[in-house]
Image (tube, rainbow, N blue to C red; front, side):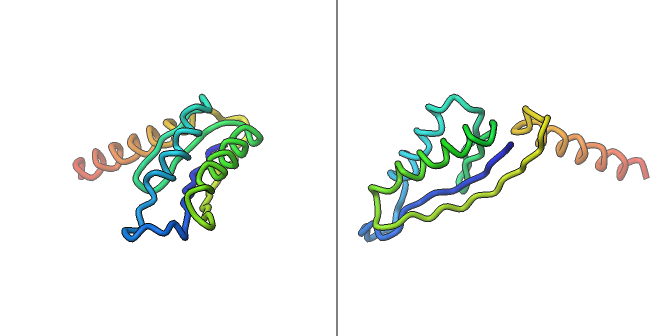
Length: 108
């Protein structure tokens, strides 16, 4: 399964509203998990089996908790039994489709 999630504290008391220290704590949990992952400016994607992925999400959420009075978690999951390597595989198929469509458009 693939899970894209974003976890951040609120009620941090910081005048600038920055949450980068809390997010760094969460990303450190993900990186230390050993599971395939990718972090972007808005989400972290992680790939693995149900129990191991959700364990990492819970621990990342717990790591954020000390930074504020509450925690927000946004999560999206792609559950596709029998598939692995989809963290990169989905992007590779997308890029191939874009290239194919571009080639077809130039052929006209």
